[in-house]
Every structure is written in structure tokens, then in C-alpha cells.
Image (cartoon, rainbow, N blue to C red):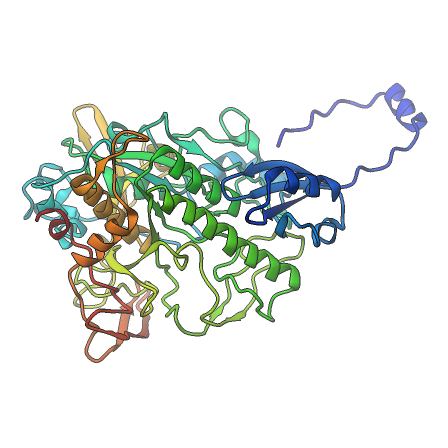
Length: 571
């Protein structure tokens, strides 16, 4: 949003203003997302939209999803009987940022907010002697990467470290392409930002802050920037190179492509998600990681009585459009990997959702309590052709925060659990370590004037005059990229030449079969009702019980098992 220029009012200007005839206020424009009916032509759909008083702002022709602006208050009803349209729903509304918030917006926008979608918890750092791995041990911070040992990625690197021709798409809050432990594997040319910064929601609550807080004053960040930190951590977990600096990723020689679908604030909306997925298919991306859910609904229900008819229509459209985009990516050779969620619930049971809608699309809208039957779906983790990943701690137990469900979780992967300790007290080294943008560390006051960390969850490592920063995070957001990294190793090891795009390619169904077939089986706890005890820093104790269901072929905590890079490529 551009700032208004204020000029002093003279008597002449006041008189001219008073003398001018009154002008009618222009009708406010509202945005909608319109899903075309399968088989309908884009031309017919556009005609219907325009006949209803709408104007197409952007369209994804592969999926048939358009973002539309209109001043017609009856736009939805006007499109109701259009033969070329399957569904229409209100898009996220953009509000104005209050003046008080504008004063500090630049600083606020630079501070990484924990991602709302499958949110992670920042935890601290620690040390440890280097004890394992022939290749990863060469990295200075390898002794802190217990997660690499758990999935035998360090040993797998003797057989396969990844191929530059294998592209891994990071659908997230962005990637810091200048980070020294990411830059060698980062493809700036192919990277894209599909988002536009949102100053505020329909209630006026600040989201990304005013657009003038961006360096160039626009609403669109460059394709090599991450003003949240979440996406950079994910990218580093997958493909930080072996370069004598910091950490190594699971697949340290594959190529990282930033397919930004998330706002600075951690929201992920439908159109950017769809656009990123189809673009991934078009350019030959082999694996994508999606550590989030599509806002504003944690669970999308077709006809939940707790939702208004308009909200039900929105959720039906979101499910249909997201599935079309995933189908398109899958058909074009993309293996889709997603986080199972940090709600600590069984997705196959009836649950209560108190987080949705988490974004005010219309004034007055706010999260409320909804009873959610198992027929409702979280996107993308419950969509077809998606590998859903739960999280483990250092002992290989399912992490206390990780959601689960027999038939929902496909595989497990290390994402950290800081309470996975003998005394159930918090140990900050039991989270996972990966790259962190220096700009965020500076803005947040997490490093001092000498460049040294001032907080326990940020770690610094230098090679000569080049220094990189790393942060500890835990969550299924961290488990998913480690599984995606193993998937990238599988494509590197067994893929064939991609005639359409160069590089390598492998059928996503084969990738999934190898990933699941080589996972290390992990049985349900005995007894299956497992109680987690956490002694918080305050001294208070929290206990929760999760029940694991399933049998020899898979279970709700681990799916087919914990991913194993060595078994996947070392055969």
C-alpha cells in the first residue's frame, strides 16, 4: 500500500473543495476465487464471470482456477447457474493497516512469525562430540544433527548424495538464496514467488504489514528472500551442501527451487498453492515439500452444520481446486510430500477444531469451535497423491505434538521433540538444526554487533570470512523435508533421463513405493495408549495420552515406518 501524501490546506483549496459537486463513493471491490467446471473452456468461463460483473485478475488455466474482482454484491448468485462454473467462494480480503501499526511495520515485517500452518516451536542449541558418519562428519555442525543419524543419511551419502538434475521445490515462506549453506544448490532462475504481501485482513489486523516496508516499496518480495525463516529451514534440511560449513542436508547435491506459496506471516492461500504446484509440474520439479495447510481452514468440510452455506461452498471449492493441482503435479512427475500437522490429534477420529477460520476473509469473521468428523480433510496432507509425514524425536518415539492416524500417516521422519529426554525436561538440542537467514537474526536482535548469537536457539558457524547462521526448530514441518530429502535421493539413484526438461525423472508412485518399502518398521508402543509427560521450564507438568492403532503393515504413529536413506539408495 502506498502512503498518502498530505499537503497543507489553503483557503483556496478549501473553497474549491466546498464548491465541487459531491461525488458518489465507488463501490468496494471484492475478490472471489472461481473454479471452472472440468471440460469447460476458459473462454466460456470468462464470459460467465464478466456477465456476472466480474473481472479476472489472475487465472491458472491448468486447474481452471481464477481470482476475480467484482463490485457486484450479488456476484455469487449471478454465477450460480453458469454452465462453465463449478464453484465460487470469497477470497481472502485485504484490509488497511492501522496507523499505529504502520509506524513499526518495517520492523515487525522483518521478524519471523512462527508459521500458523503446522506451526513449529523455536528451541535452543547445544553442543556434542562428532561420533558418526563418513561424509556428514566433515560438516562442522554435524555433531548436532542427530536426525541425520536416525535416518542413516550420513551413511547413505557413501552411495548417493543427490544429482544436480533433480529439482526439489520448496512450497513455503520463501528461501534465503544468499545463505552460504544454501546458495551453492539454489536455482534463482527457476525460482518464483507466487504471493503478494497482504497488509491486513478484513478486520484490520496486521498480516504482512504495509507494502512500503518492502525494500523496493512493492507488494511482491524477490524470489530469493525469506522474511519468515520457515522456508529456509526446510530448504536447508533437504539440500544444504557438504561444503565444510555448518550442516548438511539429506540430499546435499540436489537443486533447490523456491516456489514461494506462503505469506511473510505464515499464511498459505489457495491461488498461490495451486499456481506453485502446476508450475512445479511444468518445469520438471521432481519433489515438492509442503509443510503447511491451506488457510483459512485447518479442516475442510463439505456440509458441516457449524459453517455457513458460504463457508461450506468455500471449503468444497478448496478441496476440489487443491486436488486438481496435486493431480496435475503428480501426472507431470512431481512427488508431493507434506507435514502431518502439530495438533497432536488422530486425524481419523472426530475432533474439535478451534483454529478455523484463522484468517478473516470478511469483517467480523473469527476462529470458533467446530466439531470435525473424519470425513473433513486437511489440505494438502489428506489429498490423494500426497505422502503424509509424522514426526519422531531422538529416541524414535512419535513426537508429543505430532498428529497421527492409522491410514493417514504414510511414513515418519525426525522432526524433533525437546521433551524426548530421560527426565522429561526440555533439552533444546533435541530439536532439529538448519539454516537461518542472517537478516532475520539481525532484525530480531538474535545476534550482536560482532555477529555472535545472543539467544540459545541460534548457532553460528564460519569458514574463513564466510559465516552462516542456523536455528533449532521442531515440528512435522521439519520431519516432512527430511522425508522429501530421501525422496530426492531416490530420484537421483533410480531416475531416468527427463527428455522434456533434462535432468532426471521418476514416476512419483515408484518414489513413494521405494520410500515406504525401505522405511524401518516401527511398531505401536506397548501398551498402545502412550502417555507423554512434559516438565515445562516453569516447573509445571503436562501429560497427554495418544493411542496408536494399526498392525504389521503400518500404524497411526509411524505409517509404514521411519524413512531410511541408506536402505533407500544403498542397495
